[in-house]
Length: 353
Image: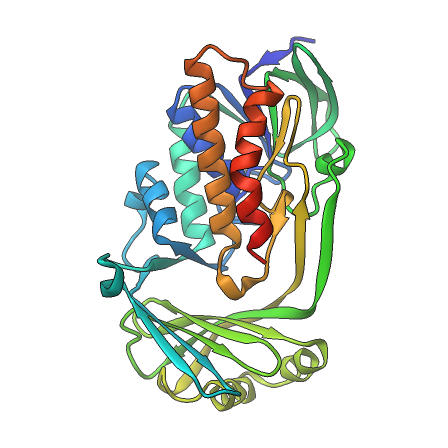
């Protein structure tokens, strides 16, 4: 069977893997993007209804990729100020975009909207092959490169792929990471994140809130004109109680805990979803011909809103290191090249918890 040759194979076509592919094909790398789910903005699991709080630098990266330009004003809400408060101490701090001389501190964007634009960019570039629904089942690594077998996730025949480098970007439960013996250090938090969307009777004017409570932080991120994405960190016993509340009772409880600074919560949009929280970090990000990025290499608490932003900075740094190596005529899978990336990124991932 013929082996398809690439510069890189990326395992995982979610937010991080797709972003990396977009950057690399812009540099002229030939990329195989292997994704287990059928590849569309509605079927890819990470392209869901979650709100992503993007930092200013993440917005710049997406602008440079021509992703941002495809978002409507209703899909990307600017965060112009952040109010931080503590229920126990009663303290309050306000940070504004004007304080740092920028148009916004960041943006709140639905993951599906970003995913749609990433797919648009990828499908318009001949340097990328999107292989889905497929998974990497076998990997052989030697001094010359990587040989992988991508198999149809529905049980079809295998497809041989070769490349100079394998990038693992398939999330915190990556089977490929385990297969290639990257072992994360994981510490589960005794908390869960309840995520939902609400609307109020008042325009949000780009205001975000972070309110620290007894059970955990409660974040409200502006979404549209009067809406907010809610990320409420709760301990198990509190979560059980909150999930048993009706939709109207939930709004009353949220109002009681948060107060009326954002107005009166008058509508719960969609369903409430719960996500487990775990601190996870790889001691080693890279081995010869293999590198790990995004949630496959680190997961952090949502209190700082840095999870996806860390992953995006991973791929921007990796792409720069690989471009520089290629321009110097170096092998992009060489451990000395990959170690430069690992040193660059490991410190930030380790100290953001």
